[in-house]
Image 1 (tube, rainbow, N blue to C red):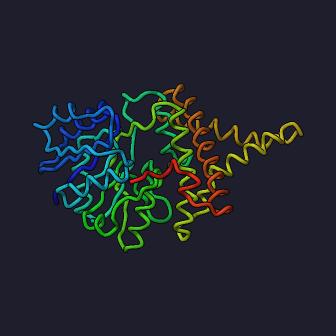
Image 2 (image 1 turned 180 degrees about the horizontal axis):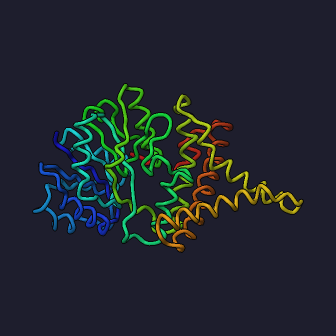
Image 3 (image 1 turned 45 degrees about the vertical axis):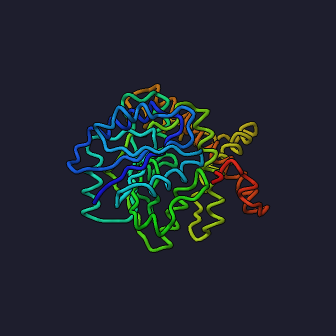
Length: 332
């Protein structure tokens, strides 16, 4: 099996250098290809790519900006491999990553897999807090943290594998972003393909570097979910409402305090204290524990507001997704 890494990049040459460095020291003994797709960047990474041309077999493409999903499709269309490994440009790979993927596919082959993510010691405190929040069982992380929950696993394109056969049958990613990952996964299921979590094939994922960018990211996640539910009602779940209900419950709890009803607010405070404790123990840092509380609140608030806004426009008012939220769709 010949692997092709598919990596879209947009104005992030420093991140690509770290990723290419980690690819150059993989302990995998066979040849593989690295396909980098410059998605209309104004700060290209061509000079970085040149540094690694002698260490890696790299195919480098530059195209007009059309979003990460379309850029991944472009990369897969031009790749040589029979199996594609899709990464975000802000990932760093452990040395065993490709060997782990190869072993998992030989043991239990699937046409699409996903892996979890982790944080490196070199990441900033905010990045570590966001990583904890995005992977913890205490928030909405769960699967991203490496545990496969009830139902089918939905890979995420920061760490996803896809066979050429499945790509050609599905036509790859759609033009919604974010939301292109579950959209592709559901279409693969409908075509009869299986997906699986490879829990030991993890990557180090930097994610957003500040809370403002993190809020914008999770807010878009929230907006995209009701759109996906409208496209694929069979796969809609009540658990998708959790951040919105969490947020509304907190608001009601605050409103009850002046009337002497404090138990609901105490439950919320207990939750955040427990979150702080678990994060502090796992990261061995009280500061990261404090930051994780802020990150969790931003996650629930951003996603919850976005989900509620989208539910009203898409599900109740029956607006067209592209008209209601043009920022979620790239034009090809």
